[in-house]
Length: 177
Image (cartoon, rainbow, N blue to C red; front, side, top):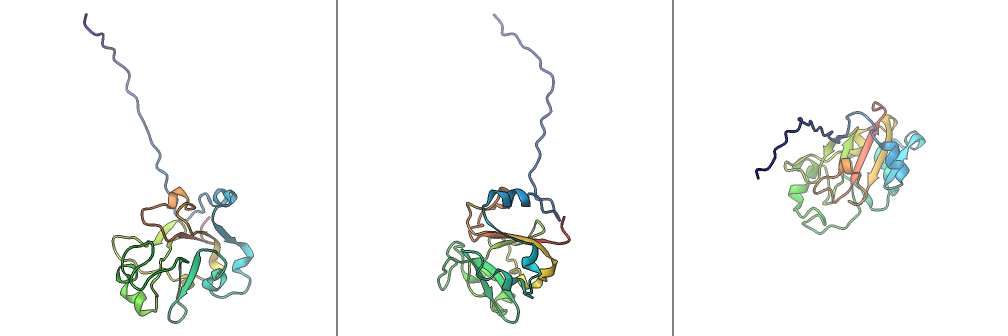
């Protein structure tokens, strides 16, 4: 007995990619409602501090603000580092910090990945060396909200990448909607 063949109609399968829309506070309220991470918004940015780093210093357990020459400041994990290596990065200082940031006084640290209005502006594990993002390059009056995740288990899926062990900071400006 021969097997009976049956023809089926063609089926179209579509998959939507999950991406972070640029310039939008996509999912901010949902992430805040979950209560995982640290969130800053509203009056905290208009309360008189003139530098973004001054607003954030000491406010988030597990995060440190590293200061350099002049008004430069960068967000890092509060985890300890040794003389030559970032505790989670497993690369030496020359691979973490570019020569311009080193000249600007950036110390060895486990620097957080940073997103501005949903677009990555610093990655601690980029295959190409990226300059650190100076927090004080943004006027606090232009900031609408900030989300900070100090642990890989806290990072929302759309911001998870390999090597984000130092945490993630997402800055939303007033220009974003």
